[in-house]
Image 1 (cartoon, rainbow over the protein chains, first blue to last red):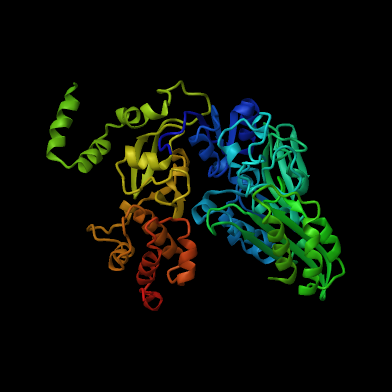
Image 2 (image 1 turned 90 degrees about the vertical axis):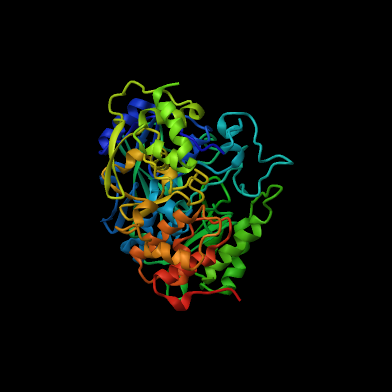
Length: 329
Length: 216
């Protein structure tokens, strides 16, 4: 493995959003946006990607921190994962997100890594990251979905030529919390629901989010809807540190006494986007949150799943994680 | 051969290789070291025209309480600056991919992987490396002494990063449980597998002697 300098790039360190947007507009696809850089620098060190310019957003103080807004909260995109894990308001009202942030990578990466970066990072498919000319890289085949392809980590839902999965832990929690993504561009701001922010290969095989060149994810808003609900987050990975999920589940339950009035079940690492398990969500409305309910509805989760050669295990794993989420592990 | 090279060769005969390399790096041979250490492999362009709005290369950074003036490439990581321009070779480069923790340093009291931190991003902040932990008379930091007393290191390569992570932990949480320490140290790999020795050392440094577990 190379231990030398990254290839040259011009480095810009704007301290206001306006300056960053001007740079992003001027540089277009040549301007690589960096939050904490924990994923970006690997791409550049490996020479799988090159860029002539990096826009380091970490000096923009206005994009950091957690603010109470309307009845919910707004989290600046540059807030680090450690800050989210430790934030008193998030821990008391949306602990699902704090749990998810606390399970990302390693302590040092959480100290540097930002919420925006965790949401916008590229997929971990190693064929793609290895620089092969797969569909996602603009080529005309998928190396993971072949008889010999090593696809233990890949998708069981919604594959469309590409079988890569979402790597983000916080994304699943935010979809479960009905969060809104605030995206700034030079012509103004647009707000996109978390569920529509992530893009599958059936929509656009070349990217993971709706962000266009020149745009910047500035904040995430979480409405009051799920404040103080019952939550469960669990992530299974080969290693408890650093590793990305094999399957994860982010679940939220709004209760009326013992009865579930509404539920969100979102799984990570089973599709290219955070995967809402709506069949289970619907079956939970009006049910009691206990083991019997869990056993009855968990099997609905994998309806329509299509396993690859080496990821058959994800079906029972996903069902079991959802079972544990419903009964409260 | 230039005079500098002749002198250097003569000096090299008197010094150990390790000392020699550290002195050359620290001696201010910075202008040439950039191309000497990094140029060949990286193919990085020589000083380029400054693009408007991009960072200046000559910066001052606060390392171990000293303000150090140094010429930093835009794409340079803190680990590269510390090791190859400031002579602070206690910070190790293991994976260079934010996956091992050998390069762990403190910036404003928080741990980061120096291999994945741009040097230009630490201007105005306080960097502490393993070299900055020793006392005014050169005595070991209590955490370092505890690492020695508990036979923490085996091969020792990951030790500087482990020490820095442990010091940062004890600054935030002076009396961690063994489990809290395990969690806080989980970003530092040890390929010798000396994790229990390191945890014992942290428990010793924290004065939590009942949490020291020696093998059966």
